[in-house]
Image 1 (spheres, rainbow, N blue to C red):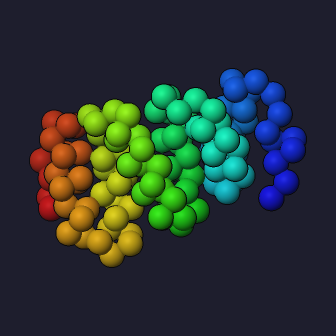
Image 2 (cartoon, rainbow, N blue to C red):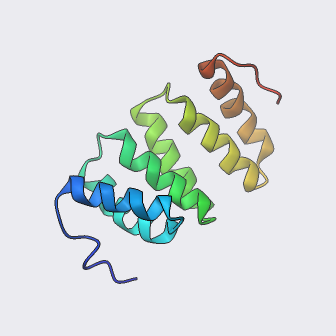
Image 3 (cartoon, rainbow, N blue to C red):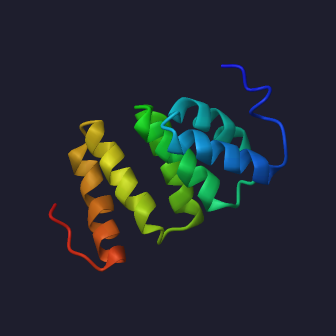
Length: 115
């Protein structure tokens, strides 16, 4: 995919562009923008989490898992990332691996896991 136009601009402009593509359900395009942005600001959780969501929604589950693990490394109590990781693992048929992440996500949100 040609990213010349999409990759131009400030980080804030690219973030907004990626969000627009994500909101339009153009997940592959959003991921292309976010991949470079997440690498540019590796300490920030938001671009990497949106990148993981774009990968998840475009069925790039191995990539989604990788990015979610990076998010959790940056912020171990990021409950939504734990939930997404659990769901990503479930979609890969790895229910046993998913269970601990889903339980932790439920605990972080104040709920109870049904797993």
